[in-house]
Length: 207
Length: 207
Image (cartoon, rainbow over all chains, first blue to last red; front, top):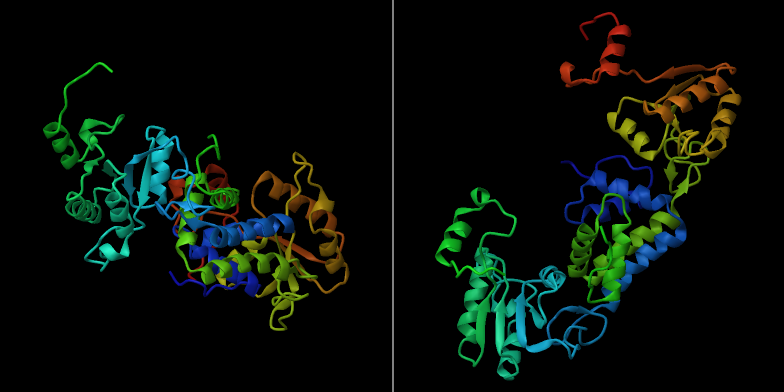
């Protein structure tokens, strides 16, 4: 696709389209549609939109304990005394943290790695939030680490690294259950998942 | 969908997601993905993005002649002496103008209505840029008006209204050709288009 060789009647229009087209999954045509939509809004609404983006970058922080996004130094999960601070769920990024929160099944706290180890891409342990996790474990307050990383080669490498590094401390290390999803059709489930779900079968109960 | 009842660890994050989710075709999940992408960018890039949106709204104008988007009072199409100013193509919006420009087949000028007449939605001739079009025709500089509006009921109603109002002036009024698209399969073409393409057949030539 030859991008931005098109005619635009305004450099400001062209620039706004260019900026939107940098976003993941947004092509030039979609960007133009979004920009023309914004242009039809009242100035107040457009300025609110722009301000929200500025505030997003300038007023949010990373929680000093778990690296969750936060408006204050410590995020509201880490600051919540009703959560179990002895159980730390390790996730790759905020999206995975939010996905787990959405289940309403988890009452522990988190640790956001902000990345996965990837030898291919040259991302090592020092490039993810590992040392702060090790500090938390070292402090002795953590009883269980739940590894909730994707089953990609990077996810597996990272889980393996974390297990190797953290198992020397007095902490239980678990991993989220993998198997056939509720609602999934068996004959559409990939072979690795289905094979493992048989090997790792568990006693049937009526719950 | 119950929107924005989800947990967000930051009100600024939540607000940015809310703003993005107001854009057409962007749901809350996509909005979150876009916002987290922005959050990973350098501050400079994020501020550039926000500034592009502010500039879009504050620094663009509507061309005083044709209502195209422009950085100056008169757009670069209307200001271009190489274009044929006696031929005015009437379009609904900027997207349609850009689509015609993209063909590189048209050397006349435009008139952007910024809407279509819709009795159902209470949009009358005074709500679209009709009076400025009539003024242009009245001035006597326009020899041909090309109606390039969608074949929707609003498009047809608007074309019909423009024809009725403008045919009293000394101006030729034409409409873009409709028919089976190049590359379209005949048996997938809708009946109205195919039927009309037979009624409005034209002499075969080898060009």
